[in-house]
Length: 165
Image (tube, rainbow, N blue to C red; front, side):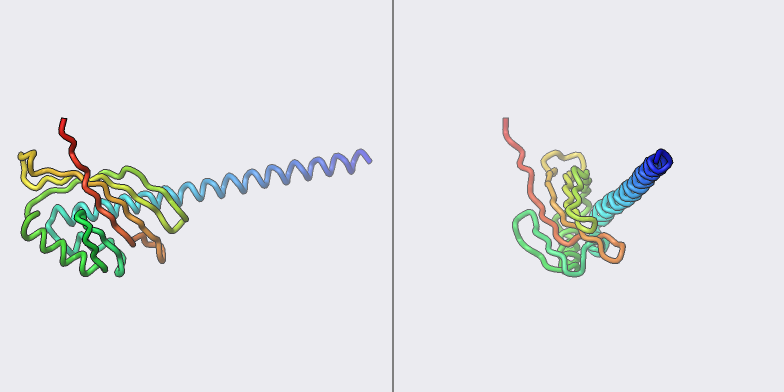
């Protein structure tokens, strides 16, 4: 009887250790995948910024899904990557010519493994060395991962108003 109890206790210990090792390996794998996803999302934000700073509508719009929704800071809605590219090229050639935009990721929240909400604060300089030609905006993006690649499905831009003191 003592041998049976010892064997059962040994089996229970082995099962517990095996489960703990498997759970730990799964958590490490999930953490590594999440870190890779966050890095890919941050790279998309950098690509948008680089496209803006080059004045290149196509480069700016490249990370967007083909059927993306884009709400401009004034509330106007643009549908699709091509509309986003052409609309941005128009402003890069006119009112935002030679402007600089710097984005800072404020947060990334995964709704699912393949869907994330991303908040980015943007600092726009329309004219160098001219504080009156600066603005800030908070951007909300919904990014989705399809076939291993992240893209922007929806983009909402909101002006951060400066309060007078």
